[in-house]
Length: 167
Image (tube, rainbow, N blue to C red; front, side, top):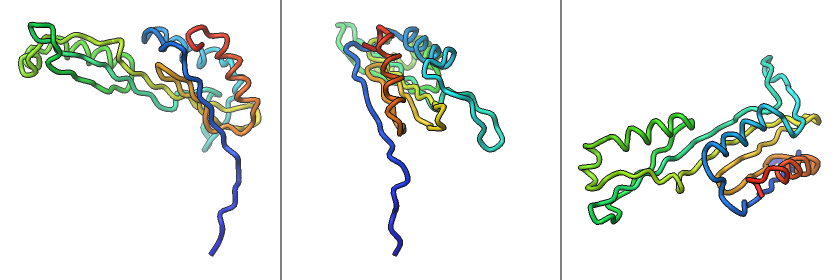
């Protein structure tokens, strides 16, 4: 029987944020700034004959939270809706808040609970050394995964230190 032979040494690291990212606008701005400004020095590459930018969104989802309060202000129910984009999350929340049949079925008035919304966006990054790694943002942490060279960690960490919301 053949043995598995290690071919790489993939690492991961996580930064727990001292405070959650305040709002979806700040979150989106941080993610977009990495894509637009490429602070990690990522390089474009070709895969399967297709040119790919050095930093691209790999996957993302956003969860809006809505609570339903009865006439006494007590929680009668809650609803979470997972969406593929920020705009879809906001649109879905708007529809939920306006749905009187849903409110009647739950037995309370809907209130958006933005403080408990959750956000997830993973970026796929291609290092100049051809290392592909991922930087994942959530409201409460930033994770770097799949990197082999410690210089990747150092570069991302130096950048994160310069972003006040990622302290």
